[in-house]
Length: 114
Image (cartoon, rainbow, N blue to C red):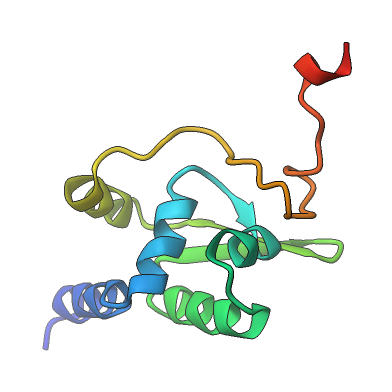
């Protein structure tokens, strides 16, 4: 089998799971940490990590560590384009979650400081 077909097949296999699709939909907005994904999906860390590992193995996402936080982002622009075709345009910006303790959610917006 040709490499491009194998690679594309891995992408489709990774997309064929509802939670992985939700994770990718979150990542379309930009880089986010694992704790934010856990909070947004209301799933345990171990389960989210398993799904992220599958996405990494398929070459769809990548990650970096910053202290105790691990941040993920979409690595393959083709996946973002596929999601746009199927789910529509992504909302822009980081969604702040009241119950999330990640650095981006715990930042107080400037409008609330006055």
